[in-house]
Length: 411
Ligand code: ADP
Ligand code: ASP
Ligand code: MG
Figure 1 (cartoon, helix red, strand yellow):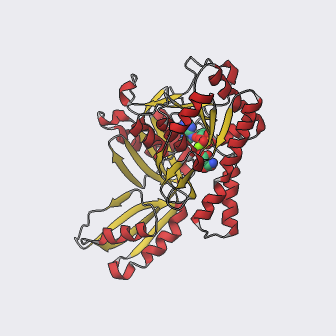
Figure 2 (cartoon, helix red, strand yellow):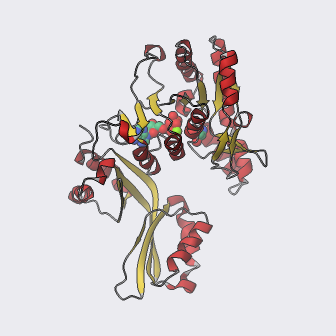
Figure 3 (tube, helix red, strand yellow):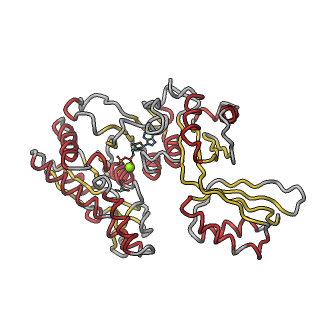
């Protein structure tokens, strides 16, 4: 059972989470609990680091931001104990959750679940484990898994103890066809495949951290997204509560062409005009951006008409827009291009569905519908089960709603 920040936002909510845990324990289930920091706390800690020094040591950033989860785990253990449930809190390093040393965005390498299982069996003890945290064994330093990383902690621990299911308790009662905060007609999906969820999450739906879905897919952990706001005692612990099951494609009976729509507003577009069209140019440009740790996403290159120069357009996170331009500016002479154009108020809208593998013309319908709304498309990319469009950020909501109804997702 994993509880996100809003689900443990204050003592009342922590008590509420404890009642969910208690219901499952009383029903005879063996549970481990993973918690996020209290809502807003991680943001505050990140901000404190920034204020202390804009450029700071990532190891110390981790030492600071990992503290939020420690408080949440301790408090939940106290509340559980006072309601008669045998419980003990654990920090990432105590389990241990072993990670690499990519501070601020570490990846889990290994978790030994045997001690957790032994304690269940010997003492019937509920482990309350801090999400988000790990430890790099060689240096002994605390690491964190990147924002939203408690989801990944939960799925990794579920895999380590061979759990029947990993329940993600959050502030919505499942995964919706799009973010319900943007489109009130969004519908809850009963089931969604790992592959589609992976696309939804990586293209902007922050309901689950991308890495958690990857881990679920690789280790075949059934992930169930559900609400912590449903009254704990009204739920039948042996029944099927409202929620969304993320599972293998074969387990999904009802297939749609389009399953969901994701969006991300923090995109910037850079176009390099009339860049020399010869081998090694793209390698030099994108190599330099990679070296500066700038993530490049959509890349579109125009076939040159004269064989001498071409236009290269791509996107980077809006936060890296200035830095990317500075990196590229240095290449003007050695590589040779006419100018850099850019915009940093761009949104990426993505339409996802396994059915696209076998249906033609799905994207064409979107182009027409957006044109009718006067929304200009700046770039398009497609892959087997999704396509993405770049538009001006001001039209994000309109575009999401237009496509949501175009593909019949609100019915
Ligand atoms: P937690 O604190 O529990 O980890 P998050 O805020 O990280 O919760 O994730 C839940 C939020 O994700 C929801 O409140 C919702 O606004 C947002 N969200 C974005 N896209 C979707 C989607 N397709 N389905 C459900 N929620 C979504
Ligand atoms: N508390 C961390 C964050 O805000 C981890 C999480 O909530 O999943 O990013
Ligand atoms: Mg989250």
